[in-house]
Image (cartoon, rainbow, N blue to C red; front, top):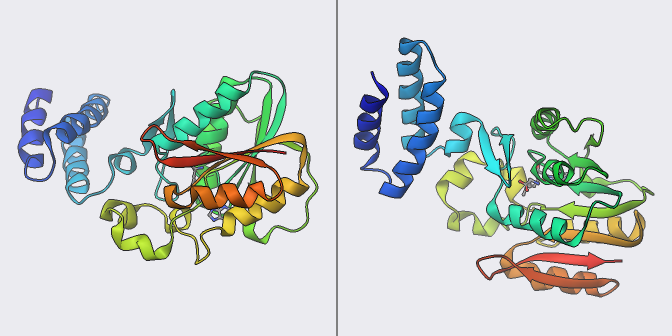
Length: 268
Ligand SMILES: C[S@@+](CC[C@H](N)C(=O)[O-])C[C@H]1O[C@@H](n2cnc3c(N)ncnc32)[C@H](O)[C@@H]1O
């Protein structure tokens, strides 16, 4: 099949399932990936497999194993969340607030590693550690770190952050986009999220503030004076997170581009 024939077939097959805008956007992914396969039989087989997956609702990023975030392209797998535009905004806010003065930081719940890899790619004097409970996610984050030549400035820690033993580190900056969806919201989420994205990345157990409380104590005990903490939150609980931190530190909430309260910035 020529690329034009694939395109026609793709539009016909997808039109009962997706809007025109979605079809155009998905076609770019298919086109790009078809063009790199030289064997026509393999191309046809792969095309059919991708199309079946797409129509089944699988996110395009999981079909092809990568996702765009900020200026970069990250490997993703079923062990990692697909990085979200709000998290790009979080990185932008951090970069806007901080120049290239040397900083030591940690990302809690790193997933694909999109946050520290973006920050370190933009700030050559920073170093980060990145924690995750998921070994599969850390493998992907490590691949991404190597891709952007950051292995000497980014180290990974396999750990359940909620069961942390007493630590005394001296971080200048902590960043986290922790799981923040209550299980009762599960039925309100799109099925492609609940069916394909790792639940450990999405859902808290029962206490919506569980991770933020752990972050509070971690921030209190493991940072330098004037340290910063940047968190992404659920829009409905952003104020609760801010109030938790305002009991001891200076915390402010920041809206995302859709005007939803989304981030909390804390200064020690
Ligand atoms: C919302 S995802 C964020 C991933 C990535 N930082 C991003 O923004 O795309 C939350 C991450 O926290 C990790 N996680 C969940 N529970 C954890 C725990 N108890 N300790 C450490 N990491 C945890 C998940 O595996 C997941 O990678």
